[in-house]
Image (cartoon, rainbow, N blue to C red; front, side):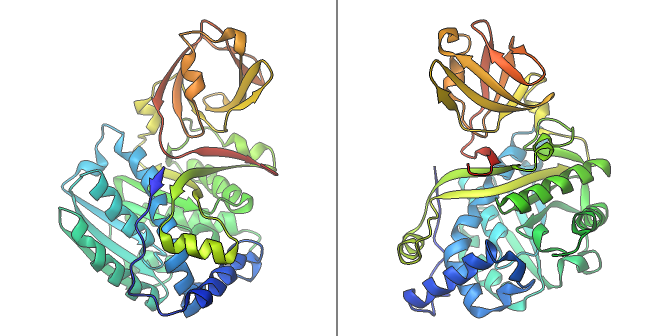
Length: 386
C-alpha cells in the first residue's frame, strides 16, 4: 500500500469548505461532464487549487509503477548518471514530483534534467514552486526548465533527445470530440517520439481509469505498434490488445493508497473517496526492449482479482495467446501450484504445464507456478459494473 506526501501549504488560499466545492466541480468535469471539460481547465484558479490539493497527491504516485517496471530491465535506463526527462502537458508538475519521490525512495541518484511543457503559465509557476520545495529530497542534482506551449507545439519548442517522455492525463485531452481523435493522437504522439525520444529511451503514458479514456489509450497502443514501436509494459506480448475485443472491457490499475490528511478531510466533505490509485498506463520504446525480456516465455500477467466460488478459484491471465480465464479446482492445489493463492491483479508469474483450450487455462496438480513480480500496482481488467 502506497503512502503519499502532501501537497504543501503554499497554495492554501481557500477555506476548506470552498475548496471542497471546487473539488466537486472538478470531479464532475473529469467524470460525468467530460464533454464540458475545457482544454485549458487548469487556467481556472478554483479548479487548479482543487487539483493541487486533492488530485495532485494521488497523481504523483501513479508514475511509480511504470518507473519500477522500467527499473527491472538489465538495460539499466534508470541507472544512468544523467536522465533527460520531458513532461508534456505537465500541469503543476505532477509526474516530475512523482519522479523526485520515486528516485529518492529507491535511492537512485542520476542527475535529473527536467523539461516541463504546458500551455497554462500558472501551471508552470506552480510546478516551479513545488519542484523547489521537493528537489532537496534527492541526493543527486536536479534542474527544471519550463516551456509555455501546447503539447502539439512540443516538436518546435523542445530539443531532444530525451531519455523519458511522459504524457500524464494528457492523451484524452488531445483533439477532444473529433471523430478521428485516436488517429490524430497516434500521429501526434508518434511524431513527438520520432523527433524527441532517444533511441534507447522510454515513453510513459498515463490515463484516467474510465472505460472510454482507457479504451482509447489501448487503441493508441495498437496504433503505435503498427508504427514500429514496442510496448515495454504492462503487456507481455506485442499482439493487439485483447481487451478491445469486447466493448465492455478495458484495462486499468487499482493500487491501495494511504491519502494525506487534507485529502481525507476533503473526502469527508465531498462524499468522494480516494483510497486507491486508479489509472491506465502503457510504456513504449523504440529499441525493442520489453518487460518480457526479464520474465521468460512462459510468463503471464494477472489482469483480474481472484474470483473464488464453490470448489474452485478463477482469474484472468494475459500474455502470449491473449487473455484467458484461468481456473484451479481446490482439489488440484499442490506444492507446485501453491503460488496461485498469492496472485493478485498486476502480478507477473511463470506458468508451466497448464491445460489449455481456446477459451481458458486450467491449473492442474502438476502445473508449476512461480511469481516473478508481485508489485504494489494492480492491472485490472475492468468490466461494466465491476
